Image 1 (cartoon, rainbow, N blue to C red):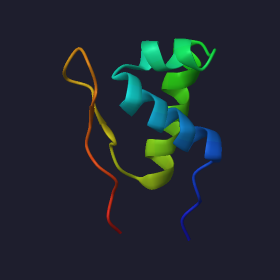
Image 2: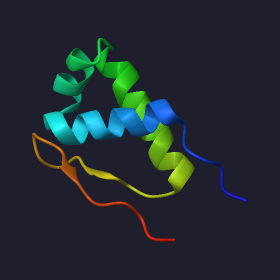
Image 3: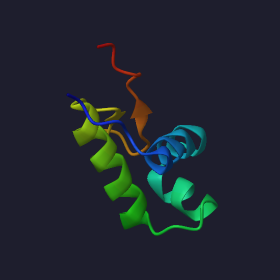
Length: 67
């Protein structure tokens, strides 16, 4: 059985997509960059997929996984 993602993890993913970077999203949501990064990593681990392409300077959303 899969675990469900936490609401704050989904909100953080949405913020990263909207702002284009973890740093900008963290600033906009009054969080540290490390807290935002950890939240996204935990979400990816929960879902078992990589949601953000981290190769570029700005992150690229890879899309929601289809199960």
